Image 1 (tube, rainbow, N blue to C red):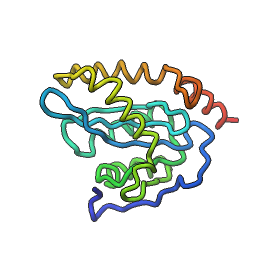
Image 2: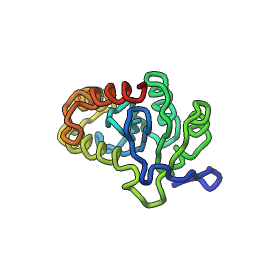
Image 3: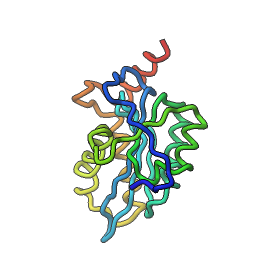
Length: 180
């Protein structure tokens, strides 16, 4: 839920054709069960290639772990044209939005109650939970972190049916396309 003092931004992706890497990135937060409780996972994903660019775990919902994931993605992969999020307070707060503005990135936010607006990352959460977390039943944050590190490496290097190549290959192809 957005903080009433935080600015909300319009959704910029309606009818937008995404044809290259680093055109649109997205992020979200999900909770993961672990050892009798739960933790939070955030990831930054390239919309075109579905490549997970960075991710972080946290045992609290403050914005810090989201900002850390954003900074890592920017440092490792440059800047996208547009960054899409939901209207959660972690993404509407100045810590997150100021980082985007500092890099000249246009901010897009899902409409309230419109989970399909960020469907790429919602699909990722389903895969993470059903293909990794639920079947492994991690007990500690360290075990979960190691399992997710292996999972995201495999995810980025595994051929995906919808794109008929790996997210890493698609990202590289899309980066070359945007440079041309």
